[in-house]
Image 1: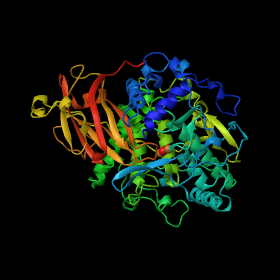
Image 2: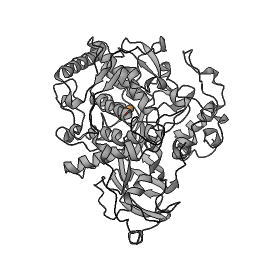
Image 3: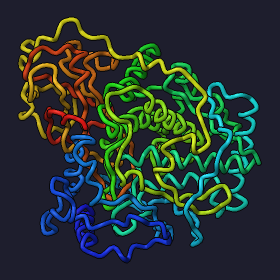
Image 4: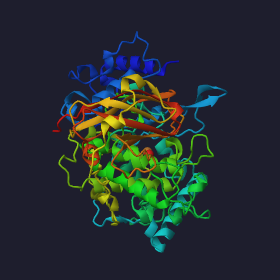
Length: 586
Ligand code: C2O
């Protein structure tokens, strides 16, 4: 059954209904979705797609359009929000306990099978808007590698209590399994978007990523504090961005501790060095660390030309769930890297950390995400020539539901979490050596004529099944150093697979294990994930401005691109590739 097709049709149907029937018990619902067909031209919407067509043959065409629309970053769509609507909190009464499905190989066929966990939260119709307490003293999140014995003892005690609730009162929304299920519920399809039946609510791979997880951790931390009667309790962060933190924190690697989880990659336990690039071919810890720092520099600094580049592409009411390539640089990069690196290869779908539906079952998830959140606070302060704010009401008014530490079901908004200090916490300082990890610039540009000998042009190579390393020539819109981006179009991926490939430019040396070189452009990484449908379509955009400077590109009108599959290349087809001029940013 072609679910993409059905979704598209449903979507169109919903667009033409009045929104009066929106289910929500909130009075403060100031911005109910408006019909998408009233959007301004230039922004794709599903009612342009005919439901009598083939629906894309398993490929959601809207996703493709959305992806391409997003290629120009913030400039193209911000300011049009008057016609759109924010993501609404889910209606818990409609949570589908069997709504999360997955594709799994049965014999040699992919089939959609039911998820074996019900990740719906307990239901209550008593709900309201969350009122942030006024915090006079900030909770201080410490680096996990420097966690004081007293704070570790507190954390273990609180975790033990949270795990105990699973047994004594499984319906208590503050229990560990209930907390873990929040993540599953917001990523794996039990919730449809309010007003858009058949369209999953999915907070990842978009601008809801950082705010959702900030609120999620906020309540998790407050609940842990409540369980031990200590409102100063603060989660430790796993500072994997710093060489001193580039191994699993000791506190989580003690099998007798409530912070331990058996379902982790056993080869990656201490003292294994974190590999954000997921390149198991590298064994030299010095190279691993250098790669990690180079990756961090790229995703925090040089790959980011707009706020949306970092925070993730726009995601509005009625939008289909985004595929992995639409996440911000940090989400797609170190964030996904750690999930995959910790996930257990003994499990089919790399549970726990290696799959969204199960990630919250590993206590380390919350310290991983504390560092992801810390990256947001750090990025916010890095001087840049673009604005760090997303000035779009659909972003600011996106909202979610959580149970607070007193078991009240509350609605929270993105705009209320943009300043972490208002949420009552701060991060203990750790240095960020990656800030200086820009790769050394090449003195002499590569000789394109030499490099291109015997290499096909891109149009001969695509569509491309990524079974081996490929090299091809791609034309540039402008010669030499220019503000351009590389776009990999219609990357079709099997959702049940962990996937990773790397992209290099004008690479004479062909050292794909070394990402701390000027020629490394970026990567695509996908975690296996349980969603309706077996494939996703991704459009990946990688900014080239600083890369051109690093390789000291000559006045050429083309480049040689190398794509190196690292994990499950056979589960990837790339539709096309091109270099585009970046729109001047606002
Ligand atoms: Cu909700 Cu790290 O993912």
